[in-house]
Length: 288
Length: 231
Image (cartoon, rainbow over all chains, first blue to last red; front, side):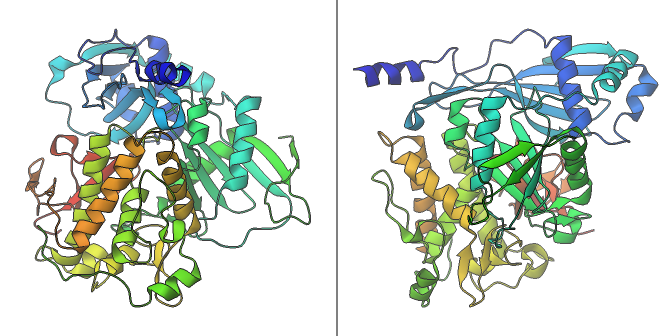
């Protein structure tokens, strides 16, 4: 009986599956958080040039209607920055995974993907337009550019366990001895976490539909881990490896490593001398 | 239906098994779903399809239907690289190999080749890195918990697709076949590549990003067709 009730509770949608009813416009605070995410992870020196000339940052937002599974109450929205030519798809997940006895749920919208869209959407009327003073935005980004949000202790413990089981991207032997790891700051609008494992030369991406502190994610964490070996998975341009999806560009790798080392949390991990396990029991956060 | 030379297994399957292919060495570990053995063509293709799409809880998951369609689109990319390379392109330009069969397409370029983690080992036998196997083992384990649900349905779909493809009994249609132009640029139709659907991933060259309105975004992947007139 308890199992039946649990199953019913998990399946019960909080809202209808279709997102036809529009949410209120995003708050200024949320838009700024998205801007900070883009500033840290997606933008380069050329991206913001035209915004400064206009003196204001223009933002278009709209609800997205997606065909979802039955009982899936997730919601999708888009933020389009016409001056940046960036389209950001956000998702607020809310659906059950009965196999795990978990509900995948986000506290707020999370960045799903960022795309360059050079053409403004033809259906401009479908969007809500907002404007922000350019100087306010740049002041905020400058002021918060070094802001760091790190995993809490519970999340850190889960991450540590996950790192133990991260497997080599090419089955190379493990590196013996002390290990140095940098954990990038968490983004308040993304369920993605980057880790630079310096000793191995790996860039590791943890990603999820659930919030990273949601137990559902850690049931699946073996699924959502991607490892890039910086010695072998990096090219200057993806043109070099046309059609392959095994690589990242040096520009991206540099950005990720920068965010991990400069803004990240550095850890020294010491495996037991007689163990093959790469991450053992002795570990300590290192001074930056 | 895709007409192609029938491939039912590898003569070296036993040896490959002895070498310990990852991904549940042809396992039937779950009561919810049984995948074809990793040591035959259908099993190898099946595992690639599973490896490249999101399951519930993973970033990029939208719906069961979306993930299933993504699997179908992936299979058409593989087949396109093998048998439907459009003129004036050559197979080596599109698939980075001259492939005799779908296994050559998948393993082109080695362990960090066209499909990361899928390669031929030192003996020339198709293999997968262990993380692929670990992921699929985990998915099969989850699928076996409780009543068969989305995990089982998705694993079964990959299995059914791969098996039907090898048996020349594929009935689904290529979702990207109608893509004859992308925002005014003439295209060949069909997709010939995919990457993670993120800003920083674009294969460049003569690949054209298929936009959302032409179903270019499926299963957390972005699909790419080819310019009809190469640059």
